[in-house]
Amino acid sequence: MVKTIETTGNISLESEAVHAFKNAARPVALTGAGISVESGIPDFRSPGGLWTVYPAEEYATYDVFIRDAPKAWKLYREIGKTVEGAKPNPAHFALARLEEAGRLQGVVTQNIDGLHQASGSKNVIEIHGDHQHLQCVHCNSTIPVVREHFTDNNVPECAKCSKPLKPNVVLFGEAVRHMEEIVALVTTCDLVLVVGTSALVAPANSVPALVKKAGGLIFEFNMEKTALTEGMDAFFGMLDAESDYLFLGPAGETLSAFVDKALED
Ligand code: NAD
Ligand code: ZN
Image (cartoon, rainbow, N blue to C red; front, side):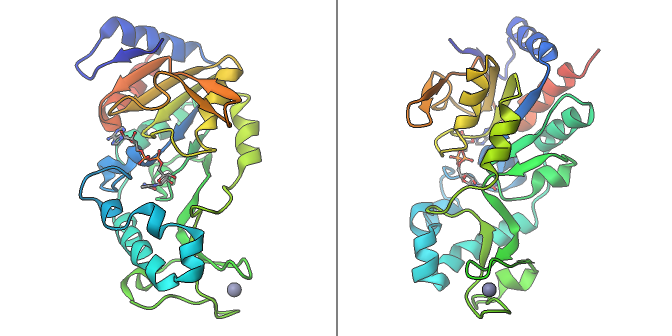
């Protein structure tokens, strides 16, 4: 049964959670779009945001990129411009501080914005790729993005095979990245901080379930309850997971306050 810690503070529950964190040997983090909302990058749900103009299911699929690259690039340009100016917020810095202190094994992120690396995190595994490179799906080469890729109205082409390039991100219909490395890491961990993810996107949402299966704890930081909060099936029903604690509120506040306490002597 999840224990919820409201932003207004439930001191005894919070200190119980901090104590449990301090006792964990190998904490890890799973992050999603919500951790970057306070950096000005909308998640899939924000009303009026990018994704309401360009629904992900319509624009962010591999099929659309292959059939109609100019259409797909309408979305990529907007994401590119949004990500370009974004800066890490206190939630990203909190995870970097934990790692620096030797209290976090790594960050598995669904985000493509590079803000974990920008905040100083070193072991970042990008399960959905990154938006800082363009990729040719024909010859597999990648190039770093430059501003013009997102300001020009042309679809950039591969210098080697003249095919349209796409951002080096995993679109719907493509395989995720680094899954073996992720499973190897998280199955050695005994606590997972799940920050700003709806836990609806597979297989990333199996990370908390893998930690739980190994006897570990799940600490969620979110604005609202999610699929994970009160119990969900992952891995096609083969694993189940339920949060132990939910820190309710903006992660920039809740996670950084939690990390302050977790790093106190
Ligand atoms: P999601 O949009 O499905 O869910 C975001 C979650 O974050 C929600 O549960 C929401 O309640 C929570 N949230 C919003 N603001 C928050 C805040 N300030 N503090 C804490 N929680 C907050 O995102 P998802 O689970 O990451 O899955 C969507 C997919 O979209 C992922 O694959 C991701 O790659 C992609 N995506 C990435 C970015 C990015 O790189 N920044 C942005 C949008 C979408
Ligand atoms: Zn090519």
